[in-house]
Length: 315
Image (cartoon, rainbow, N blue to C red):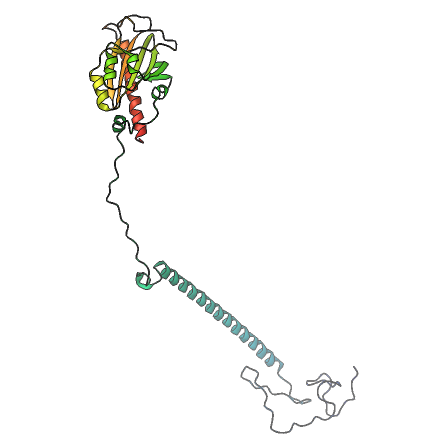
């Protein structure tokens, strides 16, 4: 861009004011005086008026003062911005604290039923009061009562179920089950007057098993009746003996020789034992092995009958 011709009374290049360049600033030539009321300079925001120097005048601005004013205004603006930021942060923190307090109050009210004073909300249904029955449940069935009543004592009854297991240990003495059987004709497995006792009391059947230990054999016979009184009568009227049961490696024993016998009852069952030597020797009054074997097997029969009653009673 080329310079236009110098106009009279214009400031020299490099002076304060607008450059003497065409196309910018005032039009070249003598400046026109403004008409109307005088123009009032705007405030600079710092409490000072800003007097605009006429172009080409001798009064130059105080550059140091302007610089100081500018720097002071900048510092104030920074302080205003910092102060505004702190205030905004405080306001935000206050809002967050208010929200937290409001939320906490809401949670407390919800936990207390949504109302003040710890009272239930209006219209809330009353909590039901638990009630307990005054009826006492019946006691569990007595195993002996079950064993005494054929209508309750209805579990299957077999020799292997009643005389459970092939090996038996009682007080450290081990016995082996050799053989078993079951007879509905009770008199056919009894002798010496016991057959008549069983028949007269209404015996239904007899279950037998033979156990052996150290040359001694024991046969136990469990007679089943329709009532406890019939079984008790068979025990009280006991005479004779149950026929010994051979088999399973056990030879015939207790024939035409002295042997140890016993009788007892529980519930509607009466049980009898006969014990002797497998070699045919007689049992004497001083012998302890055969009577002990008879007692062990009789105790085992008693325990098995009682266990049957407990199982049927749900024990």
